[in-house]
Length: 406
Image (tube, rainbow, N blue to C red; front, side, top):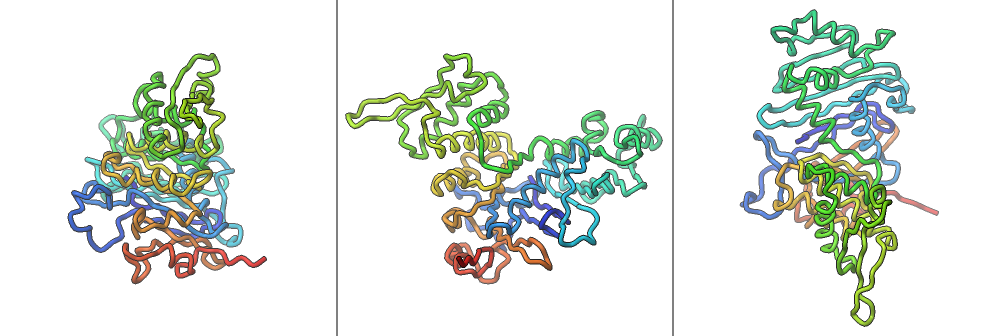
């Protein structure tokens, strides 16, 4: 479960904190019996199940999501194209990304990485306030990793061989090298790597194919071969969205169905005489196909307790459909594993006080001096869950909206 992200000098962002904590003064009365989750709770920490990012075009919403994608990519190794500094503040020479979260049985962790166009300059992992390791330019402290047969000298050799390139630059993360090659060395390293590499699922657009949705859910269910099982789970939810489909079938009766599952999906609608008519899934609307892929991704995240991050979740979807998919993460029946959803959207219909709480709405604005900044509705004085904050947003009270004049 993640509780915060800090981004420094990334595209339009100079410095931004993205809080995922429950930002309200107290819990709702009888919250443990509520069907809708007001927050997730782990080891005494409370986090929101959902955070929606709203704001004008070019305010920086997508840059927040791109920064989370870059954080994950850095685990695979540094690359010059991952360095995307703010070009309007050229005195800043490095980018820094930090994430905090909670892991069951281990407690609160913090992972930070700072880099420029050529290498990783600083990398720090802490757990419960204790430093597990720290690399700062040429100074490397690995004492938190030491064990009987892994003294400081051996750990320093591992660092030099596995994390530095031929020019002696730090280009491969300590976190990933230790987690992948020395998994038994430290449980915190292994657990944090799993959170950031396996459980952080970032999508820089909402263009999911049927295959992506099915594959994600099959992997989450632990059976890469049982397409029918994954299809049936998506089918149940898809038909609840009232898209006019009477029923669906998965019939892998063609050789191309393995590579293109839509070839095997058949949908059925009723004609004007009340009789069923069969359609290929490719004949369905773009919105229906988008909903199928998105549902597979979301159901996979809910099943495994992932942090799912999606840019423009309302793309190709009616706001009512997007709202129902978002509501899955707030429904106690479906979100049993502390899954979280971060999304950006433009459709203000999603700013419904019956859907999102004040802790779950972030408004992104941008100006030259401060770059992109974010405030949650819970940070604004006088805004409560009973407030019509969609109306206030459209009136410009929170900024975050364009004022076009053509």
